[in-house]
Image 1: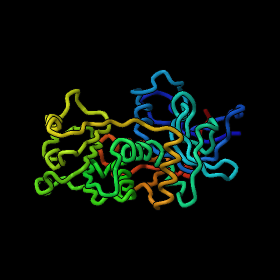
Image 2 (image 1 turned 90 degrees about the vertical axis):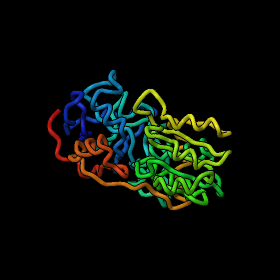
Image 3 (image 1 turned 180 degrees about the vertical axis):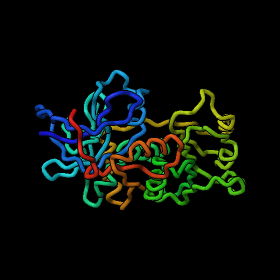
Image 4 (image 1 turned 120 degrees about the vertical axis):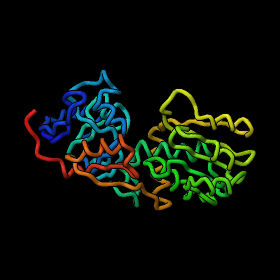
Length: 294
């Protein structure tokens, strides 16, 4: 079976859409008919050679996506897909059966394709680390980003009383000692003092991501006067992905996405690098251009 796939041929060079012979699936593998694939920062770093340097090249990129298997809608992620093995930026793919998560009714495949890594990070942040409750006042910093937007939606879906996304200095001053939680999706890359002052005595803060420097913001020391501490987040697995998708279906939640064609991926990379992104990019795999011989 031949497929069109976006292949990483050399680190730091543009991807090439090639005609690739799809291998026969093994005992615990399936053939996926790809519908949409998410654009994850990991894919960009892999193309640059900054991560997964020892992974095979050439290979098909794409670490998360939405597909059908015998008509069954699924999300695919994990198990080395797009890193240790060929990924999902292709019209069809072979993947481990264990990497499949059912997409419940009410969640479109295009939205599901964007909810893998970002969605589960947001889900774990809100439910496990921040433990948002129905009567909480929550401030989300970086709410316009891919993870931050989902955090806001999940927190509101859980019934948080007030989810604040403004960072206006006057508003923060007026909110002093009123916030139960601060969720910072940009890893304390700014002065946290104006925000920490808005926390109640029992308030807490969760920091996500990798800080741009090795030193925390000076405002972090303001937490010494609070009872609770800083948390961190990690990417969840299959079970957390299923929980998150089921929650989205129950509460009619989705992810803000921008649909792109495969030939727009380099532009998408540039926009990720310059932070010109307020949503997740999703590739419509039906837009895969004609392949060239590999």
